Image (cartoon, rainbow, N blue to C red; front, side, top):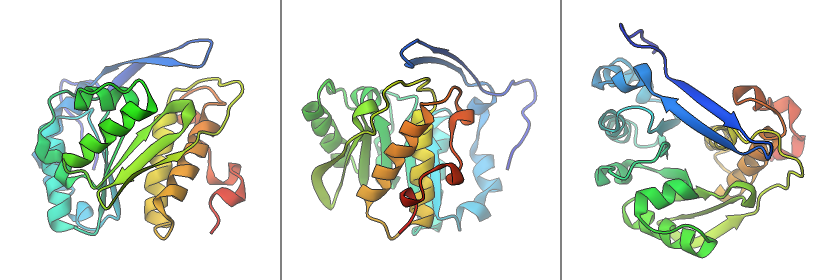
Length: 231
């Protein structure tokens, strides 16, 4: 379901990486901004049967909301993950009620709630606010400190500490590594508790920052300790 858009370039990103491994990213959306309801119609058969769908905010939010609605109406057993990145201060509140898992970092949580997220205690308050808005579950990633998460039926916030990386090389794509691992585990390790899924996702994200690049830093399953993916 890839289509060409006349007169538009592909979405691109300019990434700068400091000696510490931290990064700054400038995104030029390009053809991503042209994703429309027609694309949802074209992919309707697929969306009606997939186990997990990942959404993000690099495409028009109106289209994202339409796709979320379609998934939950035609495939209620499918899991919707929303990675609200880049974050927006003007999200249609309706989006949250179609979100099974909202996965964001501290900065994104601050922007979406208007609440400070400088400490873990403040992040917990922001997380609770996002649950109140209708998300079934919320995960806030905390960089080197791991992640916190809670759900509507289990509102006590749980923490998963980060995996120490003494000399990070490049943090670009760490969030994507976390998210991709989470989606994989939701589909192929559905019996695992969310805490185990978050734990492994944190570990894979930590593994990714030991190498340069974004996609190039994502490990193959064969490169990971077998215990990470075993039952």
